[in-house]
Image 1 (cartoon, rainbow, N blue to C red):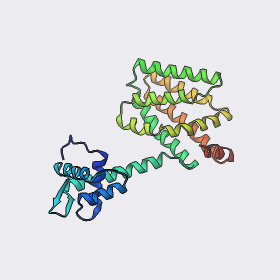
Image 2: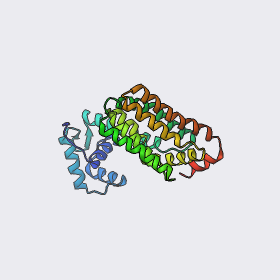
Image 3: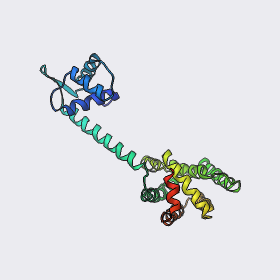
Image 4: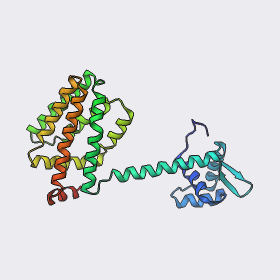
Length: 251
């Protein structure tokens, strides 16, 4: 298969169909099976799809019995199945269903974000620092005005993450800021507000920013760790109460 070749979703489904058939499969049976999988297409279209897979070296005709996978086709099918499994595991991990999983989410952030801020320290531009200062200023304004400060607090972490310059950390930390987590974070912020601790987040953001300005990666990482440790410890202690259970169950 050419490295530049791009398979459509239908191509991939057809390849996996041949892979799972257990015997050579022709266009007619493939069309029926694809229809069962939600692909409304004609037998002629399936025949053309099989021809494309043939041309890419992924399938081959076995006399008149139908198509089977080549070695390259089997390898690609294995890769596709592994990708599907990873995606399923990822989506399950992103669907927080218990307080223990909320704690795991905060703990994952605590493991990753201090390193991300350390990586960002020498890379931050003056524009980045200005954006972080603006985030801190808006955070204070929101707190003083009794407004929800979660979005600006979230923005602070996003700026730091992107400035890390590491594709791996950007992907890993970014996955922990998926949209469904924002609802959890908003609820946890509300709980910290009731405990009189929400201004602590702003304090830690200022500590992080001060360390970044001084290009002190160790201090910036320590401040980020302390920031998230406050989060984690509060969730851990409050999770023993019925109130936080009710709050989180509403998400």
